[in-house]
Image (cartoon, rainbow, N blue to C red; front, side, top):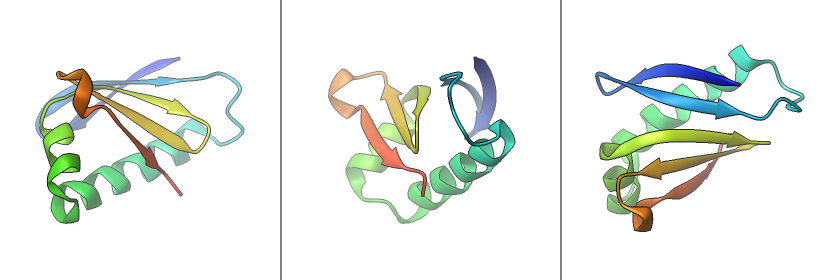
Length: 79
């Protein structure tokens, strides 16, 4: 499943696996809170990834953040 979220004034696609046990709205709320927290208080590597974010993939309780550079791709825990 694919959805779009607004992050830093741009639309970012979020891909979900269909076997997720959590409701989509709860996952999106956790994702938004985590991204907002990391853009403000995260280290330079996380902020660099978030500034060039092109898509997000949700796998279980982790968000895989894909950026323009493959070296900046990160995994964040949502819980």
